[in-house]
Image (tube, rainbow, N blue to C red; front, side, top):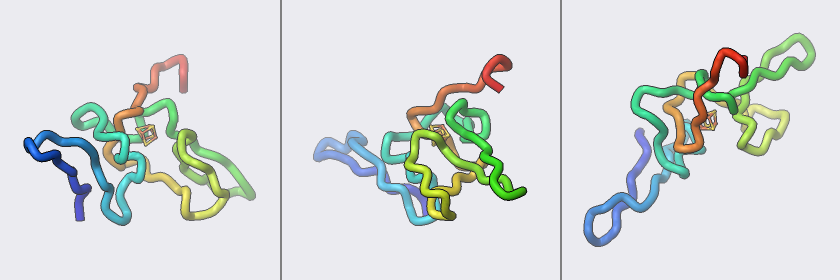
Length: 87
Ligand code: SF4
């Protein structure tokens, strides 16, 4: 399944509904072509009890699997490229 692009009467895109298992942040739209979450400043790795959890810090972090975030997901419109200084 892929995100569904919702179009207005004139065929222009007006929104996105992510499919189950896709980046839920796609509701804001797609980011730059080819960009993935792993290169975004909002993608974080949190250490807890010797485990690493990947999260997007713009989503609600639930401390459960529900808010786990995949590095390879296509970037959303709120993507901000990670710079050397931000790593
Ligand atoms: S591109 Fe950045 S802001 Fe968007 S979902 Fe991925 S990590 Fe979050």
